[in-house]
Length: 213
Image (cartoon, rainbow, N blue to C red):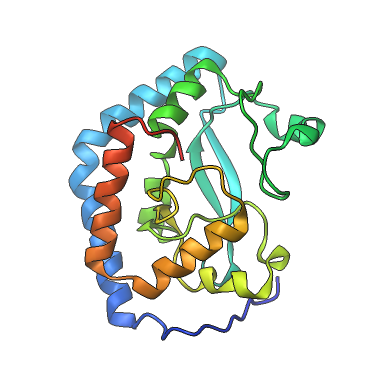
């Protein structure tokens, strides 16, 4: 794959800042592991009992610099969901290649609960430990960087996140252009304090059941 080169107006994040962010990511994941590990086990068991294997859904996503990587989630849909996607394309509520539909028939009962509670995102902590993702950053897209407009590529200059500014903005049904604007806003304001604020807002959104993001 060709390398994605982007042009930005804000200065790039300095390497020491990236190293501190990486250390913070690993530290927070390890500190919360004793609490989250049993929860992850229960979620995995629920998926297995309802619809069997696979327990995890692995999907290629676009990361920093346009590099593709495998992102982990709990499987919340029937096993053949990807094949059904094209059959349901006419019901898409967002602009392609984004895809979303209300009352998606591919979602299982357990999957619906995992999505509402955002527990389906927990396996992405594996991606954080591997360095594919950060706790906070732009959400990685399923579509490749060669489908981006040039101005979109600024969002590829930082490691993608489990959560981000878009998720806590209160705007869940927005197209990629608006998400990209929020991602660029995050990049230009990024700091450790800002990341912690987004994490706290994310937890608040989950516990107040403002909706899956």
